[in-house]
Image 1 (spheres, rainbow, N blue to C red):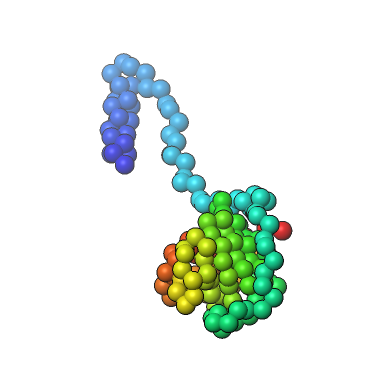
Image 2: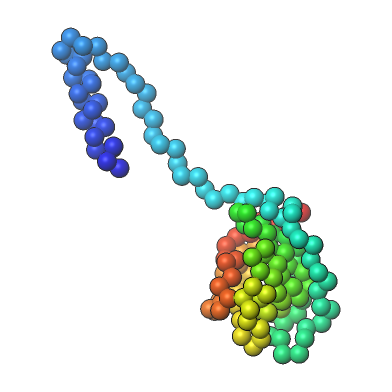
Length: 156
């Protein structure tokens, strides 16, 4: 930002030289390029690990809910991360475990990397799918600090 305060002064000096017998040479003004927006790299899902077979039914003691519904199932990309949701499982590269879906709530638990098993380690998240976009937002504290908040793009 300091250049912005000095630049007009430099311009006055250069233009002022024109009146002193010097020749002012016009220069093109350019503004710095805008900061790049975060990009989605759907290629993150191109190398998504093959998911293990999800359990057919929830185990005793799991949070209330069912399997991942069809519109939520599949691979979702956010920047360079791929989130895979299928049956009662999730995998996002930095961790994997189990999920149950109850309406607009999805609960992530039994995280392998987190090391907390039920009844500990349940992260409660709100989900919404709109076309090929999935939005995840935290409903309650996630003791495993899963970094999954944001808007994900479906990877076909």
